[in-house]
Length: 317
Length: 93
Ligand SMILES: [Fe+2]
Ligand SMILES: [Fe+2]
Image (cartoon, rainbow over all chains, first blue to last red; front, top):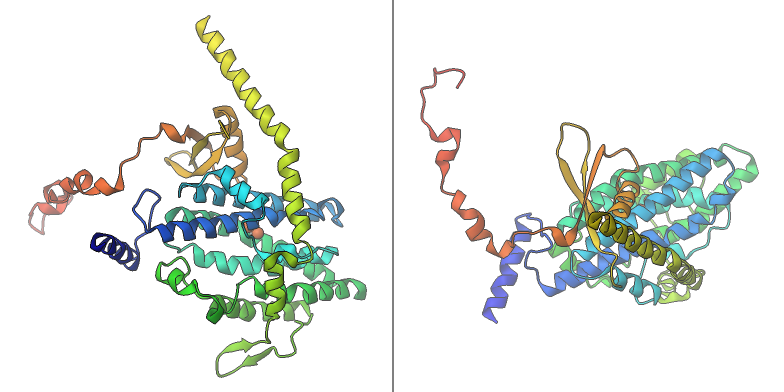
C-alpha cells in the first residue's frame, strides 16, 4: 500500500514539475481512464460534429462556400482520427471506441444535437461553436498527456480557418438584405446559449474539475473558459451589428469582464441525457455510416490479401 | 476485428529535415496506410516524404528502465566541450 502511494506521489511530482506523461510511462489507473474517456469523447465530438454541417454541403450558396465548408468538414474527420489514435496509445482499441459511440455508451459534445435549419447556422457554427472549441483546445495544447497535447497542437493550427470561414459567412449575411441579416440574427439567437453550454457545468457542479486541474488535464475551469469566450465574442457580434440574446449581458468595469445571464441548465442536462432535438438522429446516422460502410472495410481487407498473395507468387517465381 | 493494424506515420516536412513522428492510423496494408497518411496528415502540404511503419515492428525502450538505460551517460561531463579548461584569450576553438 505504501509503495502504491509513493508511486502516486512520484507521478504527481512529475506533473507538478511540468513534465509530460507518455503512453508507456507508469500512470495511476484513474489518470488513464480519465484520459481515455476525455480523449474519446473529444474524438466522437469531432466525428458527430461533421453531421450538422454536412447537412449543408450540397446546398451552399456559392462554390467558394462549398470548397470552404467541404474542407472544414474534412478537417473535422481528421481531428477525430488524430484523437482516436491518441486514445489508442492508452490501450483501448479503435473497435471498442466505435462500439462505445454506436451503442450510445459514449458521450460527445451536446452542441451537435441541435439542428442546422438555415444557411446562417453554418456561419454561426464556425464562428461560435468552433470559437468555443478553440478556447478549450488552446488550453489543451498544454495538457499533461503527451499524445493528447500533440494532437491538440495539430488541431489548433487547423481550427482558425474554421472560425474565420464561419465569421465570413455571418459578415456576408449581415451586410446583405434585411432578410439575410435577420437570418444571421436568428442563427445567433439559437446558437448562443448552446455555445455557452459547451464549456460544461458550472465549476461548483463539476466534481471532476479539481482532480483534472491537479493532473493538468485541464489548466482552466469551465467557468473561466466560458468567461473568456464571452469576453472575446461580444465585440465580434458588435462588428456584425447583431445582438446577443441575453438581456443581462453587460460590461462590468470592476471585474473587467462581461457579466452574463444564467444558462438554462435544465436544457443542458436534458440534451446530455439524450433528449435534445437531434440525439437520436445523430446516433442513427453514425450507425448507418458504420453499417453501410462494412463493404468498404471488407473490400479493403480482400484487396490487401490479394495484393499480399500476388507478392508471394512473384517472389516464389 | 482481426487485421486492420495500426501504422505509425513519419513525415519529412521539407528536404534537409528529418522525418518526424506525427501520429498513427489504421490500414489493411502498407499501400493503403500510405494513402491514408497522405489524406490524414498532409492536407496542407505538411510534407514532401512519408514513412509508414506497422506499429508492431517498432521496438521501444521501457521507461521504467530509464535508469539503467540513460543514467550511465550522466556522469561523463568529459564528453562536453566545457569540461576542458582553456585560457580566455584563445580564439576559434
Ligand atoms: Fe475540430
Ligand atoms: Fe473545427
